[in-house]
Image (cartoon, rainbow, N blue to C red; front, top):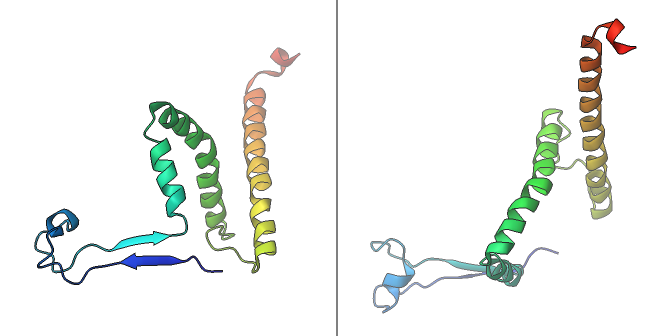
Length: 131
């Protein structure tokens, strides 16, 4: 089901008493477009919540933890033409399966990188020092 969206516009800006507050560019012939979709109430709640300094700090901390892996996964899959930006399967169930497969692949790749790094570090030490 497509998202429901409303776009509000006004065609009579010339004689409107609120035109100066509405238009960003005073020379514009038309006023701004205001768009509302079904997520607007969630955006408002989020904006109100984020006015609090505590919420901003918590959001900043959480952002790094959750957004970094998502960004890396997108970039990693794009490089290998697996492209999580455009999933190759159709249908909500299959797309969900494809998306749920991404984090384990990411974690496996990350683990293998750590393992390879540790292996390189141990191979650099002399054999006599390993015993």
